Image 1 (cartoon, one colour):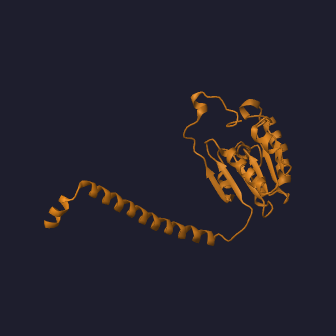
Image 2: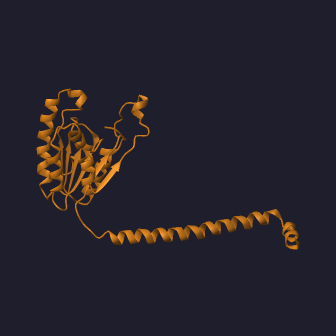
Image 3: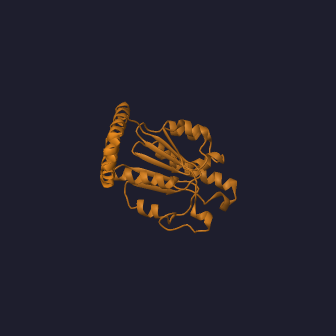
Length: 222
C-alpha cells in the first residue's frame, strides 16, 4: 500500500510518458526477435534451394491477372538479356499494349495464334484447326534451347476443350530444354498439368469492374 500511495502522488503525465516509452521499447524488442527468427528461417530455406533448372509455371484461376503476371516475367527476362517467345492462343487481337511494347524488343518473338474467343467463332472444327496450327509454333519454341522463356498464354483452354491432345502437350512440356522456363496461363488448368508444374498459382476472382458494367480499359485490360 505505501508504494501504491506514492505512485498515486505522481503527475498523470509521468504515467502516460513512462507507459508510452515502455510500450514502444517492448514493441521494438519483440519486433527484433521476430525478424531475427524470420531471417533465420528464410536464410535456411535459401540455403536448401541449391538446384538450378528451367521451371514450368502454371497461372490459373478465375481471377484477372494471369496473362499480366506472365508478361511481367517477360519484362523481367528481357531485362536480363534473355530470349523470350510468346504464343497467344484463343486471342486474335494484335493491338494490345503488351504486344505493342514487347514487339519492340529484338529478343522477344510474339505470335497471336487464335481466331478469337470460342463464343465468337462458334465453330469447333475451326477452333481445333487453329489451335493445332498454333501448337506447331509453340512446339518449335519448346524444342529450341535458345529460348530462355516461353509463354503459352491461355493454353489451358485448348486442353480443357480437347482442341489438343493432352498427352502430346504434357510430353512436350516435360521434354523441354533443361534450362528453359515455360509459363502456361488460363482458367481450369488440368490436374495433370498442375502435377507436372514446378509452381502453380491460383488467382481468385473476388471483384471485377466488368461485372459492374465498366468497359475494358486501355492500359489495364488492353
